[in-house]
Length: 183
Image 1 (spheres, helix red, strand yellow):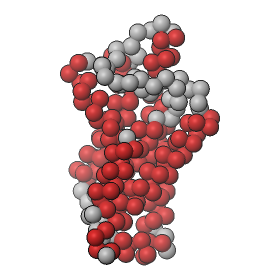
Image 2 (cartoon, rainbow, N blue to C red; image 1 turned 135 degrees about the horizontal axis):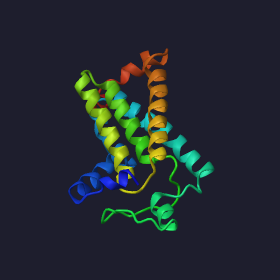
Image 3 (cartoon, rainbow, N blue to C red; image 1 turned 90 degrees about the vertical axis):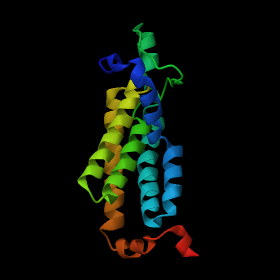
């Protein structure tokens, strides 16, 4: 309810669209574009996204299918929510947040690749904005985005550690080129 108090008309469009930075279609499209710059970075993003999202979706559907979303929970309790027009509200599978997992996975990778602290801070803020958008749009509870962010970071850290700090690194470094250089 605390976060729902922040729902005001001037912010609605911003959060309605920023949430898409955690959408699978966006991440897959971005990875495809990055292939033309650096195959290794594109594959890293895809592997981190796949591992973290696979885990999140697996536990969401295997163990937390009965976790209702805020719109249904508050409707049952007869507590009105401020809603954003044009947002289709889901009612089940709230825990953990898949968009938040994906956003933290993506922005962890981009931060990992970044050379400056300013870019790392921008990545972290971007991930936080996606997570907050999920609560702002009444799609998730705070605990959903907290666990989603944790999963995104942990799995991406593990994947990056394996790819960049093991014997695999030497072979993997050969992919630091655009895809058109393969042909």
